Image 1 (cartoon, helix red, strand yellow):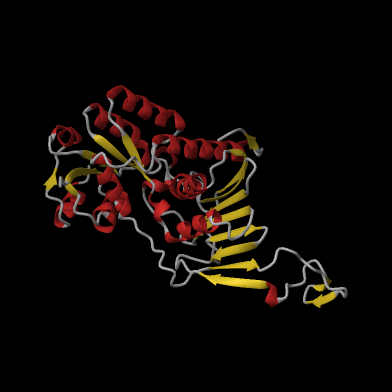
Image 2 (cartoon, rainbow, N blue to C red):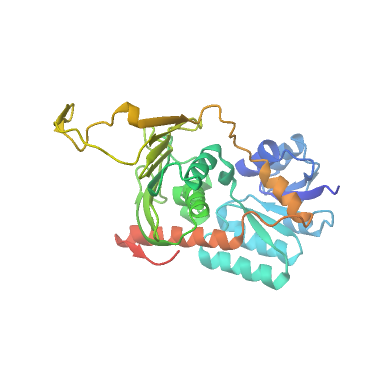
Length: 353
């Protein structure tokens, strides 16, 4: 079977990760690399990539290159992608696909004009924690879900380099928000009808170093997304609430559990219950024999980032479709732009995203 040849453009953190961390299929090979930093190209060759191109034009001129992986800073994505498509090269673009919905539309127009498709690397759709959450909701294990909380927090700030600069597309909304929003839009087949967002500037004035975004889905749940880089206490990765139970996944270990009611009917004791919160009926704990616990530990669900390139090879073979489509990326981009507007105006943004 044909082995598809991909050239990497930009051998920073993500270019390096594609080569060393996720391409675990013999259907795809990285045949070359181009970076403006010669030392990075030297590193790429030391890590098994055979060809170092002297220019981006040389990448496009190489007939053996089937696709170009763009892993540069965000502000270069659109121009490089369009040039590659105009040269007849399939494009894989790192997230976020572009700096704005207008740039993404230019890319989509270029794809239509040239007849050359492109896709986006949204690898977090393969995360074990996300797969568990989606499976739990789809199976109805929590009943009707009314609230979802998705968080990624740390305390080390924004990594040094271009991610600290707005002109390069830095900040946590474009870095991590794009992942978490994509997961939610991929999981919930309903439009977002309103959202409110506050960006944090705890240690960085130019770029957001965190944010809190609340989205309401049409006839569906409310979802809260939070990213923070100055959080010294770790918050749960996921909390999901339904009318029959709840799910929690505490951290990146991907362990977690479901607590759900055995019976939907709730009965209250005649007497007031005395708890640490004081006398109450409403907030008194349920009797343990009315609940069941389902643990995720050892359930066999694992993160599989390799699936991205296996699916891509199937697409090139004509046996599958693109798993991440530009239209999906456009929804994510529109939500992020509305989030920026909400932070700027201090208002809730209404629409259909």
